[in-house]
Amino acid sequence: MDIEAELFDSQTQLLLNTVVHDLQNGLGIIDQFARFVLADIGAEHRVAEDVERIICSAQFCQGVIRNLAILNHKGVFNPTEVNIETIVADVFSMLERKLANVRLQTNGNGPATIIADEWQMKQVFMNLIKNAGEAMPEGGVLVIRFKRRDGFLWIEVSDTGSGIAADEIGYVFDLYFTSKEGGSGVGLYIVKEIIHRHGGAIEANSKIGRGTTFVLRLPETQGVQSSGFRVQNSEP
Image (cartoon, rainbow, N blue to C red):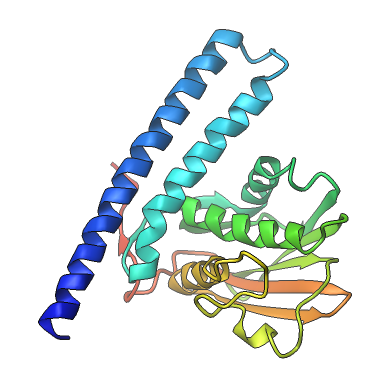
């Protein structure tokens, strides 16, 4: 890499760090004031549930910003026991108004718990559930199945949407590839990176007019890859 390229990379990283810092501050203020409002109105108030969603969404966005380092092949892995079924329910609740005509079905054999980074798992399912909703603008069914086998948790995320063309399905995890108007082509790339760095795998299957299924395989215990995140022990 020549000096000019190194200078450009350092300036880009500095700009990214500044943007991350400012966004974190802004989201922190939103989170703080939403908590003040919730404390003032009380949990029984008619808008209390909406205020709680604001708090959850602000926290989620803070987690996404922390994970921007994924695009630069860096980041922190904070392993803890997480329940994927609970994460799915939380994310669906955050997106509930956008998914007003989408019905969620979950089923599985046994607890859907693994050792993983909670905020990164929320980012995975935020992207998958959001994409499923966008594929079903007139409504439909989102089915999420869990199955434990051979030390892994297998997860299927299926929608009844428009489907993805056969000549595009092989590119959906590529950075900047998108078939959606206004899409960034970043979401599924980050999903793939998070899953791989947890020691897992993901694939997509689809048929036009019949919907799309994402199949995830995640190790039940910590499977962070040495080339990915720095492991941060959550124990004091």
